[in-house]
Image (cartoon, rainbow over all chains, first blue to last red; front, side):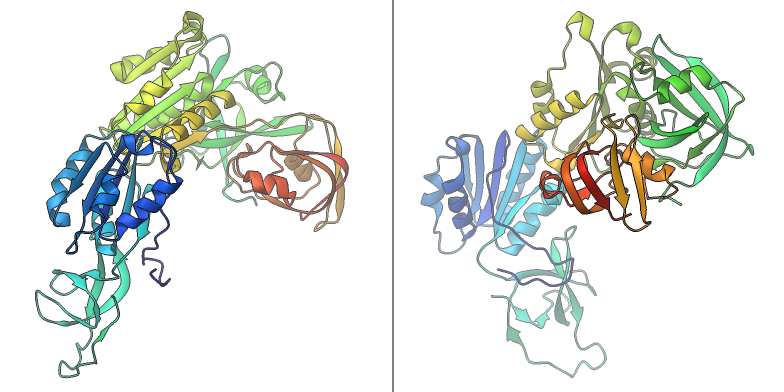
Length: 198
Length: 321
């Protein structure tokens, strides 16, 4: 569970079944467990109107558990990028009454929410639950490049190579935390690197 | 000075009967200047000086927000109400000088919406007159569903149909035409916001169905000016100002507090905005909560009251005022 910090740092809840006509789930890796926990609280027939988009990750676990919920539609893909066209298409054709549930890593939740915001869903109307890795997606404020799966503080920008302080300052529009050069005054000053976003 | 209730000195520039129940009133500034800018859904509080008595009633602005040379309101005559609408109909004439509040909007459009779905019942059409004008000027995507008792009581139905054609759909009670609410709500594209203004039964129905069909609360907007309900008189002690007052049968608690020379904050005077929320210090009796502001839990707690619409039945009530 992510610790509380400044106001822009996203906080996540616990998935719970919402009233609605259709239920769209987007999850990665251990996010599947959040869906299973919701299923235990959901009314009978809930998943007959559900669509699950799942990115299992490297170990490929949890697929059988989600399929066992018998959702109306089930999709699994290797990466979020591979699932993106399907997510966009689903939202473009959706009507009011569709509820969105996001579970898993912050990167997955943030990027799926970014697409949902563009489709007109208010961020406060989206159910979220953080599970699994605390790895961050960051944007370098200097070159604007995005670096995925950052686990260290500081971190090196994968685009321009600057050493970045990873801040809690978050952008829903970019679906990324902010990275700011940590040694702009004296580039020879290299603070120790710690792995803190595991 | 009450919050947001800076006053405007106006003159009644026109009085236009619209149908057997509704009359429209036009106001201009006495100094000839433009009136303050407002957005669709805003209301003003009209001061009605009726002999000894001053009434402060809120009415939605129904003119186009693009034209601030004048403000227009439409008042439906209520023969069994507390007298405000009857005063407007019988005593207000062109040329009369009146005082109104600055506009306040508690029913504004959420302009992030992909589409605006509007449901009006009866005189609840007035805020939508301004909102549709605002949206139409920007090419906004809206659809208005308007339920009225009969065609002759469908206030502004002809104007709206003429202006917006198929974006307006009328339903007449006397022809047994009903809004097919579930179908309507379930066929809206993602990103639609819902707005409802009309009788409280209609607002309750629409909010309930929207919630059941999965509309997030952020997307459902409603406005209901609950006129203060009359009731048995009761006594109240105002602890801060050290006064004991009596609330008359036809008077609201807020009006009684004001009549005693205490000036609490207010905006809507209809139980929706939260400005006049007042702490209860002690009570012995039962609260009659009529507001849409406090939660059910707060109603049960007996620690707060909205004096604009709510009343009290019992031995003693001490308020922090």
